[in-house]
Image 1 (spheres, rainbow, N blue to C red):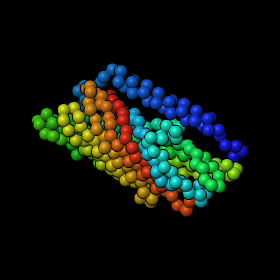
Image 2: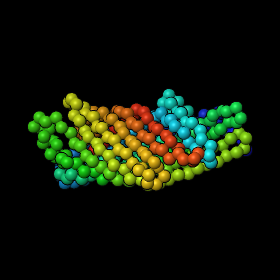
Image 3: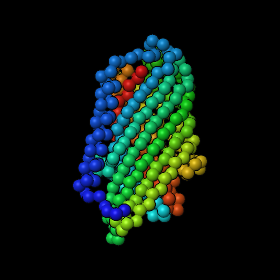
Image 4: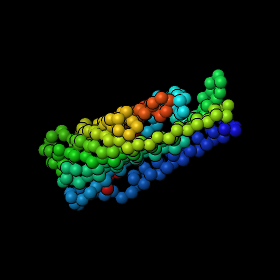
Amino acid sequence: MDSMPSERSTWMRRYFSFCGYLIFFTVLAAAFLLGPAQSCAADNPNKWQWEVTPYYWPADISGDVGVRGVTLPVNVDFSDIKDHLDTGILLNTITTRPNNNWGYIFDLFYLKLSGDKTFPAATVSADSKTWVVEFSAMYSPKTESEVKSLQAAGKRIGRSAFYGGLRYVAWKNELDLSTGQSGSADEGWVEPMVGYLTGIPLAGKLNVVLRGDIGGFGVGKSDFTWDGFIDFRYQFSKSRWVNAGYRWLGIDTLDNGEGGDLTFKGPLIGITSKF
């Protein structure tokens, strides 16, 4: 690298990227809030229906990343996310039919971070891009229609499901030193994953969803990945919920100074719309 970016230009780039990210999800959430409400299950219980949740997840990130045998610690706190987050896309979709035990889950997570760290010998500029894309089939012992019938009879029960599928994970780490050295490392792989989710009614229109899964198992480049979250949902209309909770995601591919061993964790908020 011939020259280091100025502190002002770096700050401005991060600031406008972060603002663009917030504006994007604000507009998207407003579209779901202001769009026409739809009742899929009441019209046709055999029709596919979609639960779409764009969400904001300002996670703490901790662990290590390695490029060409050089391993550096990563520690980005929630309070500092505005200084390190360049781009973020987070989306969850669940597809089901009220009278069917089977459904599908799609989850997308993309995060681009950048930052500088000064050591005695040099200043290091690091960029990290992470993709996590999941697609899985899920099986519910009780259909949504059966659960609603039990709830109408006074039973405190929510819908639960086992799921399994494939997770695509990819990241790219780039390091630039003020001494002129630079390097990058790319990783991408597909791995199996299995998990379980359950919804628990709490009071009135409030319920909580618990979800957790594990993957990797030595397939691809990952020794082990794990993901879990707790999501409180308040139903404010017939087909919309506001979400607030906490999520954890861990990925470990670090081997001989290449790859990464990172944990993402932090609060999340979102809007769920059902079509």
